[in-house]
Length: 91
Image (cartoon, rainbow, N blue to C red):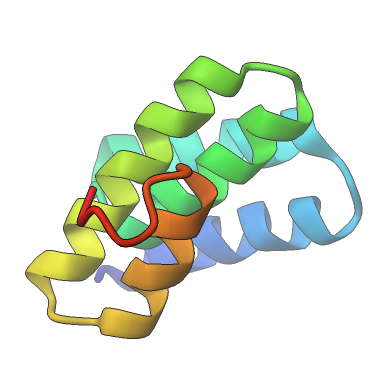
């Protein structure tokens, strides 16, 4: 992951922690445009969910799940899978 992209992902995470959903959405969209990542899609899904865009949040979480699985990161994949309501179905 590019160092600059890590900073943008961190800005998104910081915005989520402050409840600044629009700022988080903007940061995560910027990060994904530069380098799509499971972390970017996971964070974007969270911000969108809080903004009431449940459908798009689910699509983001599904992309995050797939990314974590590709990297064989079981715990983040499982946590993301729970958010989509498909726990135990593998996606």
